[in-house]
Length: 84
Image: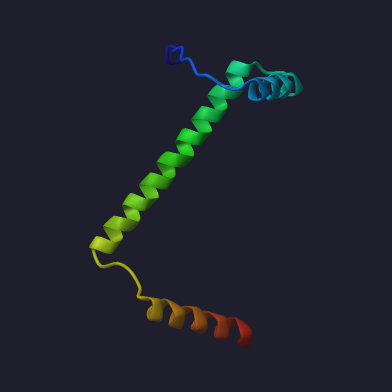
């Protein structure tokens, strides 16, 4: 396990009270909740940024559909499902 690093953040009284309440409900510490929240947020943001970068690379390679092409595919798939 990596060595923990202490960080400091200012939060308002209501958020602090909410954290205390949630920590008690989950039988966890505030530090555990904060670490989990920061980890989840960081992972989600990195995944989002990675997906944007991948989409931009696909676009640069010409791997995309025009609106008209997409709508034609969508209508074709819809027609297939209606026929089934």
